[in-house]
Length: 92
Image (cartoon, rainbow, N blue to C red):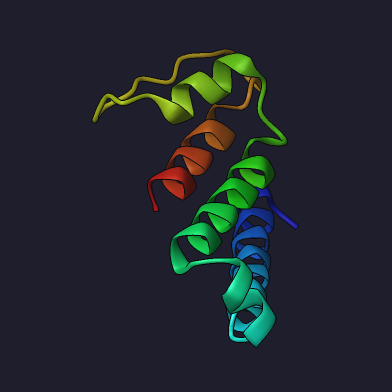
């Protein structure tokens, strides 16, 4: 399985996890404990932890950059494609 296939599999898994979290929010007890804003914040925090798990500090900095454009320069096997794909995931 290629790296891109693994990313898409990861995205689908994350979407399923997020849907499970949101659907469980319909439970009365959860609605009492959390507002929609809090649930969205928890989902966001979970996604960030999952997305950044595979990145080193420099890669995280590139992914989180506020700049509209980033230039990713590195040697072979350094993770350029991973940084670009994670940047896309972060922007979505």
